[in-house]
Each structure stands twice: as structure tokens, then as C-alpha cells.
Image (cartoon, rainbow, N blue to C red; front, side):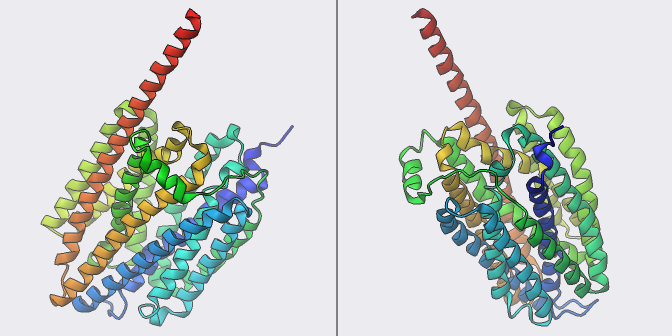
Length: 434
């Protein structure tokens, strides 16, 4: 009996790489950021001015990181059609290992070397994602795509259930032990990246400038594509910044890595139930109720934090955001990958990915700069979190715009589907009459 292509070595390696890079993301976005936030602050002490300076460093870290990722996407596409895409994944994996190495050796000087760590992390992600996001079509046949993505998503969610709580407790005992674990994860990531062997390649040209001119010239014709870029901008300006703000709020008000990891694990587990409910009852024309409900509830919890910042309001916000935000992510991801095909622009997949990442990165840089400025202004005011809360309110506004742009995108696609059906019916009638 012939073995299913879904479970060959390359398919398994792609899933393994996705899960292993997720572990490194958990390490950086939760526990590295937690260490930066606590830098030069004694346990139990509250040095508001030092805290503001550390928030500036976090904003700087992400601003540099996202800028480097954008620059990577703007030129890596020229090589994707000439070089095996798995090589990009391998280079990115090696650079992620270098990030872990830098964090380990620079623990006592991480603030000083934030630009260096951020630059290497941005390069790592630029290479890794550029290759990874364009690999599945070359490795997994269309017959197994649905099952493959389902397995990959389940494994990814399991990583976010198991590792945050485990790494959180270990980080509270000794942060160095966490870096040792990351060395092992990085080594495995490198090994699996070299095991990915594309069975076929798609020789696609990369003409970013001509593609940009085309979508500007045909703006009305490719309206759904512009809505994809709009939602990507607001997603970048809200989603990633919310993750960073949650880390800051939990660490400064709850005070431990174990608590941060525990909440992430528990809420991610519950989000699986949310995802099952969404998949069971989702219909394209009813998606606005899922999107609108998620945005409304998240906004209400943020208003609660702005009214009274305490452990209860922060945990409620954390729970609502992690449990419900999977809905917006699912709609967003499916539309991002599907619109270019709906518009019959298959030959421009690489350019579209680069432009989407540009707008996503632009939103991320904007919110990171706002976070940086909030740290500067709070520091000038002698400490406190007044401007940090203002940024939280602004990011909440971006999140509302993210939801609205997704609703508009859904409507545009429904309209396009209806126009296509009418045109198709007209062609059938014309053929019958002939």
C-alpha cells in the first residue's frame, strides 16, 4: 500500500519546523521580553523610571526587528525562483540559533545590545518565513493540503499549550536553563530544515515594481487585494503589539514568568474550543458576527483596564483576547492566501506576499514606535504608565479597524463571487442559445 504523501519525511519536517520555530517565538516574545522589562529592577522593587527605560528598549527591539524583516522580503523574492526555498528555511534556522546564542552570552548586557539582537532576529525571520511560506505548495500535493494544514494547526496549538507554562516555571528558577533548552530546539530546527526536499519547483518571476504599478493602475478591479493590504496593516499595528502589551501588563502587575506562561497555556487550550465552534458554524455571509463580536469583547476588556488597571482586569483581557482572537486570525489567514487566486493572479504570488508583508511590517513598526515613545514620555514624567495606557487605547482603535477591514474584505469577496456567477450564467445561456 502506498504511503500517504502527507506523512513523508519532507511533510513531517515542515510541521516540525513550524512547531520548533513557535517555541523560539514563545521564548523571545514572552520570556526574553520579560527579562528586558525586568532589567536592573530588583525582585519586589518598583523602579518606575527604569521600567520606562526598559519599555523604550522593547519598543526599539521590535521596531528594528520588523524593519529588517520588511527589507528581507523586499529582496529575497528575487532569489526564491532560483534557489531551493528550503535553503532559506535552513539559513533562517541557523540565524534563530544565533539569536539564542546572543541572548545567552549577553544576558547581563541585553539592553546595550538590543539593536544587534533585534537585527539578527529580523534577519532570521526574514529568511525563514520567505522560504517557509512558499514551500508547502512544492512539498504537499493539493490532494493533501487541507489535511496537512489541519494537522499543522493542531500541532502548533499544542506547542502554545505545553511550552509557555513549562518554560515559565523554569525561567523563574533559572533563565539560563531556558536558553539551554532553546539550544536543543534550535539544533533540531536546523536538522529538520535540511530534511525538507521539494519535489517540484514553480519558476515564478519576481517583478515587485511592475506588480505595484499594476495594482495601482487597476485599483478598482483588484479592490479585494487592497483590502487585504489594509487589514494586514491594522493587523500588524494591533495583533503583535497586543502580545507585547499583555506581557508588560502581566509582568508588572502579576509579577512572574510562571504566571505569564500559565495564562498563555490555559487560554490557548480554551481557544481550541472557540476554533471548533467557529469552524462548525462559520458561513461567509455570517462572518461579520464572529468578527464584530470578537472586536467588541476585546475592546470592552481594554476599556476595563483603562478604567481600573489591576490583576483582575488584565487577566480578563488576556483571556478574552487569546480565546477569541483565533477567529480573526483564521479569517485573515484564509483571505490573505485566497484572494490572489480568486483574482486569477497566480503568477504574482511572490510579489503579493512581499507587498502584504510590507504593509504588515509597516503596522508593526508604527505600534512599536508608539510603544517606544510611551516609554520615553513616561520616563520624562518620572515613571508611571500613563502614556503606555494611551498607547493601549490607540492600539485598541487599530484593532477595531482591523475587524472592520476584514468585514469589508468579506463583503467585497461575496460581491465578486456573485458577479462571477452572473457572468458564468450569462455565458452558459449564450452557448445554449447558439
